[in-house]
Length: 269
Image (cartoon, rainbow, N blue to C red):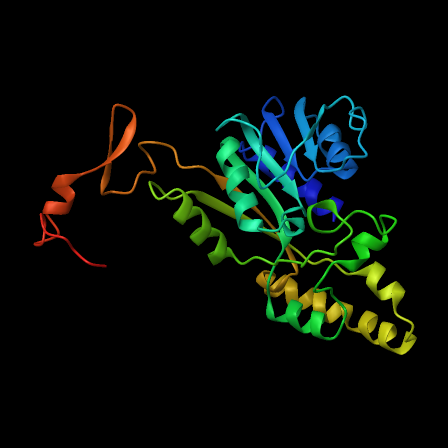
């Protein structure tokens, strides 16, 4: 998955959404974030997480900040871009965390998370995937790696494109954000290695070429995806019923009067 992470950021660099001199915040961050961002040449990066074991120099040359993704201690638009890589599903409320990242970003947010698909739900039912991320806690001495980095395994919340749009539109109803999606198939090698039934493992591996072909044809059936959110730019992305007044969005009465006979009365939705 680090390759998908790297490739996606590289594509966003090539398209101009990302620049190496931007101020970046990484939420729920770790060493993979440090390595990928450093290798790609980003210079102004703050890596944050809830790991009380940190001394503060683990991600040098980047600084570290102790931050709860659901309640970031930064003012609005403190960073150009906020990045989170497989961290939202470790929160009690992934939606709240996403909106906190959106709040402190000036230009946009880049998110990598599991995707909710029929094939993924089937895989979880057949125990090839995890509903609760016990493996992450097992890999952290049974003390960390769960929800909010505790020893309690987190539910693996999986997203869809429509859910992202609804969440952002509810939080920021003045304009439509621009979104771009990227897809990847992740084979759960660690999960397969843990199976005692070699026949099952062999059967799954035999089907992998078919699965790879299927997801190449239908990328939305991949189990992982990334999405880049570009925040609305005013006045370009304002809804047509809004206008700017003294730098703030206000309702256009002329737009409403031209479309609603009941103007001036209470209209129940």
